Length: 551
Image (cartoon, rainbow, N blue to C red; front, side, top):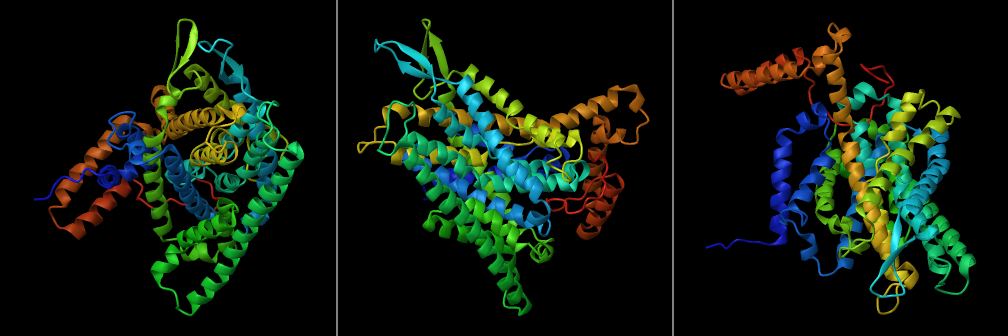
C-alpha cells in the first residue's frame, strides 16, 4: 500500500498543477477579455498557499538557512529575467537599437539616473531606522544614511519586463497602444534590468570602503578604492564585458544558425527552442566570468534578430513564449509564498515603537513611500522628456508620455537586485563570525522590507490598472446619455457580455452533440460574427497601423 508523500516536491506540483490547469481553461477570458495579468493571479495564489495564509507551500521550512533561501530566490529570478529579456530583444523590430538609439539612450542614461535618485531621495526622506538609546530598554529612530538609500533606490530604478509585458502584448495593447510606444517600453524594460548593476554597486562599494554613516570604514583606501572597484570591476568587467559577450554570441549564433537552417542540419524543435537555450548558455558563461548575464541576454536577443530573419522564421511559434509563461507563473507563485510578510508588521506600544521579529519600519511609512514612488519615481521624468522632445518619434503625445510614465512596474528585477544586496552584505560587510558591521546593521532588513513591499504594491496596482480603466470606461459608456448611440457601446455593456456568453455556452452545448469537427467550425464562426476575438500569440506589435481606440 502506498503511503501519502507529504514532501515539498509533491506540495509544489499540487499547487502549481491545480492553478495552471484551472487557469488554462479560462486563460484567454482572464487575460484578453478581463485584462487581468497572470502575474497578479500567480502572486495571489502564492500568498494564499504560503506561510502568510494556509502554509501549504512553506519554502522557509524547506530550506536549511536564510542564506540558502536567498540564493534560490536570486537564481530563480535570474533565470526568468534572462529568458524574458532575450525574448523581448528578439521580438523587437530589426535594427531596433540603430533606429531607436536616441529614445533608448535617453531612458537608459538620464532616465535611469533620475529614477534612481528620486527613489533614493524618497526612501531617505520617508524611512527611518530604529536605534538603541542610552538605556538599552529604549529604542529611538534615526534617518538612514543616504548611501543606504542609494543602494535601496537602485533596486527600484529598473522597470520589470515581465510585468511590463501586460500592457505591450495582447488584445488590449493591439487596440490601444501604438507599435512604437510598445516597442520602446519593451526595449527599455529589457535593457535597464542589466544596467542596474552600476547604480547598485556604486552605493555598495561606497558603503563598504567609506562607511554607511561616515563613522566606520571597512578597509583602507576609502573613496578611491571604492571608485577603483566600481569602474574597474562593475563598469568595465561586469557591464561592458556582458554587453560585448552578449552581442558577439548573438551575432555568431545568428550566422551559424541561418547556415545550419539552410543546410537542414537543425530540426524544428531545436530551432524554436534556441532562444531559451541561448539564454541558459549566457547565464552559465557570464556567471563563470562574473559579468552581467541579464544585459548579455538582451543584447544577444537584439543581435539574433538584427536582420529580422529569426523573428520572421519563429513568428508563428509559441515555444519560447510558452516556456516564458511557465517560468513566470511558477516564479510569481514562489515570490508570493516567500514574501517576508512578517517584516511589514510594526506596532506601537506604551508610546515607544516596538518591532515584530523582522520589522524595521512602520506600515504607514511603507504605504506613504509606495504611494510616493508610484507617483513620482517615473511619471514627472517622462513628462519632462516628452516636453524636451527626447523621446520622439516613439512618444508623440502627452497622453502617451503619461501612459509610459505610469507603466514602469517594479517586480522581479527589483527582487533580484535586493538579493544582490543581501549577498553583498553577507560576503563583504560581515565579519568572520557572520556578524554585520555596526553601520550596516539594519541595511539588509530595511532593503528587503522596502523593496518587497513596493514590489507587492506595484504588482497589484499595475496588474489591476487596465481592468480598472476598462471598468471606468464601461461605467461612462453606460451612464453618459450621449453615448447611447455610440457604435462601441455594446463592447462595454455587462448585459451584452452576459448575453454573448450565454449564447456561446448554449451553442457549444448544442453543436458538440452534432459532431466534434463540424461543431467547432460552426461555433467559431458564430463567435467571430459576435465580435469574439480568436486567441492568438501574445507578441509585440510590429506595425504602426492605426487600431480601434489607439492613443
